[in-house]
Structure formats: C-alpha cells, structure tokens
Image (tube, rainbow, N blue to C red; front, side, top):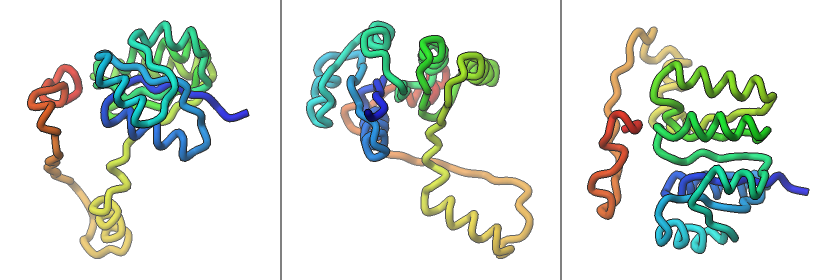
Length: 171
C-alpha cells in the first residue's frame, strides 16, 4: 500500500509538492487551501480527490503518513508541530521558519515524535548553483569566502501583492 499524504497549500508550491510526492509513489489524498475557488480549481487540475479548508481537521480525518507543508512561512511551525504530534512525517517548503527558535521547535517536535522530516530547498539544484558548485570543486574560482546573491522571480499578475512581499510572513 502506498504512503498517503495531505498537501497543505493550494498555490504553486502546493502544486509542486503534489507532483513531487506522486513522482515518488505517494498517494495525495487531499489538498488544503484557504480560499475555496482557487483550492478547488488546483485540486481539479491535479486530480486530487478531496479539498479541505481546515488543515487540522483534514489531518485528523485523513490520518496521512506524510504532511507536505506548502504555505507561507509563518504557518509552517504550527502545522509541523501538529503533524508531528499526530505521528506524520513532514515535508516543509522553504523558508523553513520565521526564526531560528521556530526551526528548532519544529525539529524538536519531529525528534520527540520519531518522524522523518524533509526540507524543500529546490534552489540548490538550479543550473546556476550547480555550475557554481562545479567551479568551486574544480578550483576554478579559488577559495570562497563570501557569497552575494540577488534573486528575481516571477510573481503571477493575479498576485500583485502577496505574502512574498511581507517579511513577517516569509517574503
């Protein structure tokens, strides 16, 4: 029997988590969102059979093996701690927490529960990062003492202002 997951977050990160879980052979049994129409549309697009708007109730109802957290950063800690308390393994999108104390609390909750954790830091697989790693390993650019980076990414026009613009929410 395949592992079962609930994905919490019905945006573009939730889509990526759903596809990644399926590629790994995991059955995604529900998608949790905040807003009915977009969440239902995303679930229909992805073929996820159930949509819920209360993630706590969804975890109680479905009792998944894995909880995949694809929400803005400010919700990560509460979801991860609750999932760990229920004995669910946890996959969490970046950024992990709003601060170091929150990240440590998430890790400690998982350790106490004996559940596995995964962190979605997909940027480390980007072509630019992989090329930089190769240059460093070959000695082409010498010893690295500091890194300065600028990141520009596309924000869909329907989201002219969203959580990525709010520092307290993880932007």
